[in-house]
Length: 138
Ligand code: CMP
Image (cartoon, rainbow, N blue to C red; front, side, top):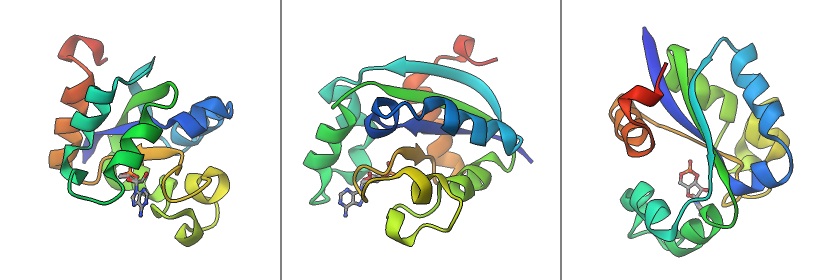
């Protein structure tokens, strides 16, 4: 099934010049870039994006990390794109991520874990709409 999913290259990835390497992994895995932009998130934008984690003890740290520098926000499209992207990313905690995944290879810690990816069809649609309008997708 052709799906779309949202990926974010977090500040730790963008700052370390990993944008090209990460985008290449998506393309080499057969995912297409349907939209992409580099953006400095405001505190309000980061808080809204991660609103589901508001009650978590790491929420403040997460918002601070996501606003620490520009991020690259990407809509990936392809066969089973949501699951495929999650396979490419690896586990949230890089110490638990499989060999050859983005987080195993690049993430610094569970907080600075280099990439975000939507975890369900419903969240993918919500997250894509949060950052992109219909006319920005092609
Ligand atoms: P992400 O996939 O973007 O979704 C929520 C984010 O919260 C997660 O990646 C991590 O960056 C962050 N996160 C999750 N668990 C922790 C934790 N225990 N401590 C700090 N940050 C966390």
